[in-house]
Image 1 (cartoon, rainbow, N blue to C red):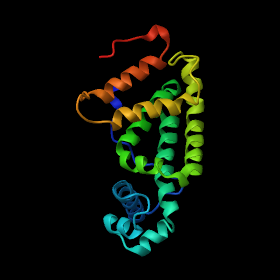
Image 2: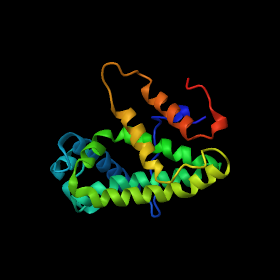
Image 3: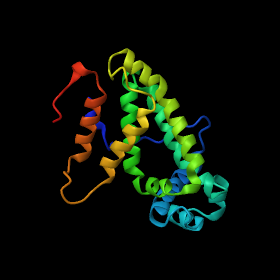
Image 4: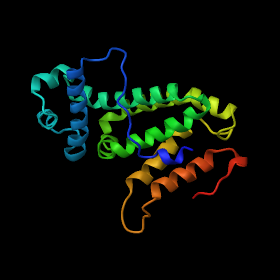
Length: 205
């Protein structure tokens, strides 16, 4: 039931203290612009370029994101907030592991250029470790529920989620001659089949 979700539109993350509508629009515009600018020009791109692409003034940008690091971190914070919301709001807790995993791949597809640039920045190692830690914390309870309900194999480890996302992220990111148009959906089918219980094998198509 989850195979058709890949590359779906991800909803806007929810916050404990919602911003005013205009402030929220400005913030979302800056994050979207930052993803594009950083993917195009690298993480050292001028912050003025982000403000121009977002259509906001420098004062507005500084008010929301006073430093480059705060802007980069906010992109990941928004994604992690959204994954936590998906995990907690999935109607059947036993389905939350798979739904959150697929939502992560959707985010990688959306932010592929930005993520590639970020992953090649050595100075971001501490941030990467914190992101991984928070990501696994979000999936801990969903994995336990999925295993208890027999939805995924019992020997699947929490840390395997990083490997699964890397594998699926590669399927999303690689393009070129000889690569099938349906490679992403087929990769999802292969991974879901691999992590599912042995008695739940289904045709890949």
